[in-house]
Length: 280
Image 1 (cartoon, rainbow, N blue to C red):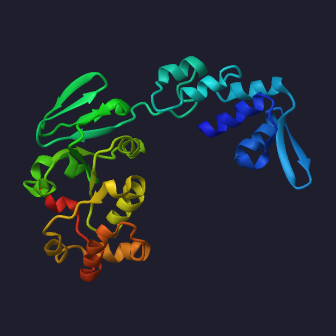
Image 2: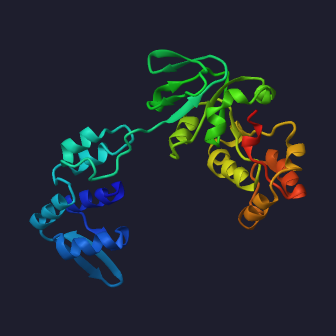
Image 3: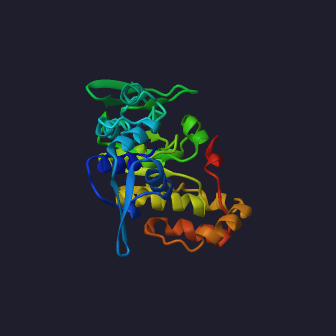
């Protein structure tokens, strides 16, 4: 059961009268049919209210929830909750969705000293490995370090195989990945002040990801990584990729004018280029 649904149940359990429109139809139908909840109709407005708390509490138990622990259950459903805590409240670790391993992976080319809470950690490149940051709220990096978000996992795993590609950034670097797909990386980026550079595919979809998921959150602190030789590579890129993406992204709004020259090149050659092409 979703957190939003449990919150509604907690409000009902506290005696609230709630608009029917706030409930998913499947949940409202079940509450009316077997959950001790009545529908209140006043003109065109319909609301729900508990009419039998005994029946309502039985309904909660059938969903793996306890009537006296609804607020505690909501509190433990944030990203730092363990399934052990959830089981102690509900008796069922699967009763509500809990992410067992929030966070994101990081990688480096050159050694970099970082902090995780009170601990100092030296990140070093070791081909075939990278570090996963679970406690990302307490992950701190030096202020002169640029964060490079690598969209493709193969490129991320092999950052040391990109030769001098990133020398044009003229900064100390730490590489991050959105894998597994979640909001954690974006939340961490919003909590720090370091510059962010997005290394994605050089096609319309790749630029759309950058604009909507990173530039929209970080503003001009974010930029799209454009290698010096990208025009020569686009000339020999994928026409099929361009044709496939054009209908959806061909007329997207370019909110960051710095990527407009790249978009113009993509349209000029009507091709896209995968970032994997930069792995030596």
